[in-house]
Length: 80
Image (cartoon, rainbow, N blue to C red; front, side, top):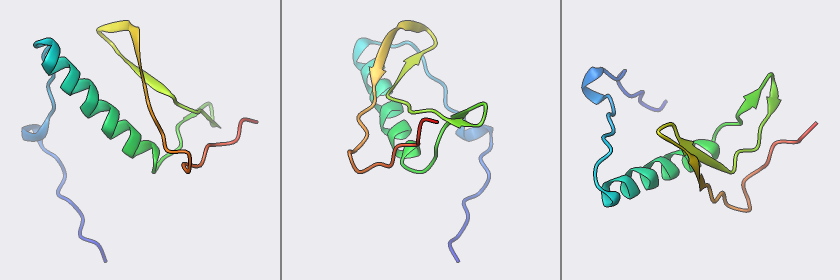
């Protein structure tokens, strides 16, 4: 049986500061990598229907969309 990780505490909270352009680029890449990994395991839904996700935006810059590059082999949910 796999070992379970400990529940996270406030010590592990993520906080993102605006920072320099290089810091922002690293943050966006970290978010992209984590989202792509999550989307390999989960199917996002809206009102019970699968939603295909191909990018994301940061709340402080809604005019910029960052694409996600999911592998071709990743199963896509059906669009009813």
